[in-house]
Amino acid sequence: MNQKVMDGVYLNILQTQQFKTIRFSVQLVAPATKETLTKRSLLASVLSASSQAYRDQVAIANQLQAMYGAGFNMNAYRQGQLAIFSISMRIVSPQYLRDTIDLQQQAIAFIGELLLKPDVIDQAFNAVTFDREKENLQRYIDSVADDKQTYAALKLRELYFTDQTQQTPNYGDADVLKTITATDLYTYYQQMIANDRIQMTVVGNVDEEKLALDLAQLSLAPRGEMLPGIFYQQAASDAVRELTEEQAVQQGKLNMAYQLPAYFYQKDYYAALVMNALFGGTPLSLLFTNVREKASLAYYASSNIDAFRGLSWFKPELKAIKKNAC
Image 1 (cartoon, rainbow, N blue to C red):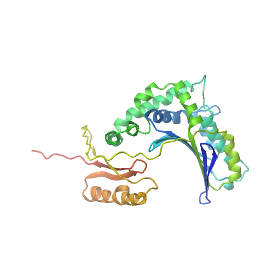
Image 2 (cartoon, rainbow, N blue to C red; image 1 turned 120 degrees about the vertical axis):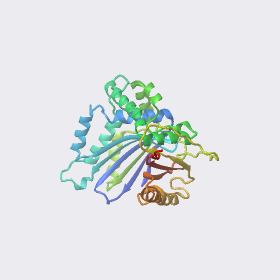
Image 3 (cartoon, rainbow, N blue to C red; image 1 turned 135 degrees about the vertical axis):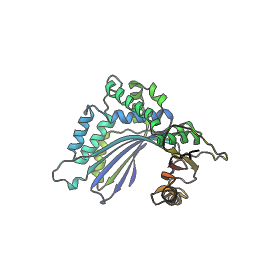
Image 4 (tube, one colour; image 1 turned 180 degrees about the horizontal axis):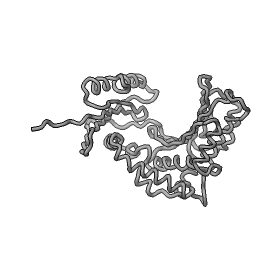
């Protein structure tokens, strides 16, 4: 059941007795830009590190353990033209507990605590937490060049896309990150909480009336609903763009991207899924069995599709070619 709670806030309940857990997800959705991708990536780290009630990650871990080892995750990513900030939680279905603890209510309260009650001092995120998480993100961005497969994928993204936002990876841009202060990030956080479209999803065996009451404690307010379409469609190009970069590595990386006019749940989507599975999406695919197993030309070879941007990726890791001695 998918229902509109208020303007800009939606609740999707997937009733099922298939699982012994209940999964909660809250997604805040806005148009993707280089700046929003960077700030959301940093926000996911800052908000998941502490809050008003849980001052550090030890306190957060202790609370999760007290809730029978509940699972928790907060991250930021992009789907097509949209930037999505997501907080999710998984708990044991209360029907399997012997005591009378209201685990569902505790889980939703925990989500609200980390999402809506951040560790803020004088209209800025706690400087200790902010500086640490900003440095961690900066180090991760700097380390990407050492992961050659990720590095090659990023170079292909820059080569293929003509739009600057689509060229930007999910974690954002290093130059934008350097300019963000604790005050700037808190100001953006307030805008995100107030203006983003919110999609809440609950999967499991739940009492829908009680769920509505528990979710009400999040105290969400109505907001605008204007968003661009989720799909990014790049104009087709007859020219093949190529980039070759030489480095002192043991295995070569060959990444290729092809425009694929098949979008999520649209015409030809399922045909594209089958095609990708046969071609390169599984260890039994043609790419893997022929290129790796039979011809022994690569350590791995795979493909995948991006159904929000009309794109197919091909990524093998080539074995080093040794020249014969003269």
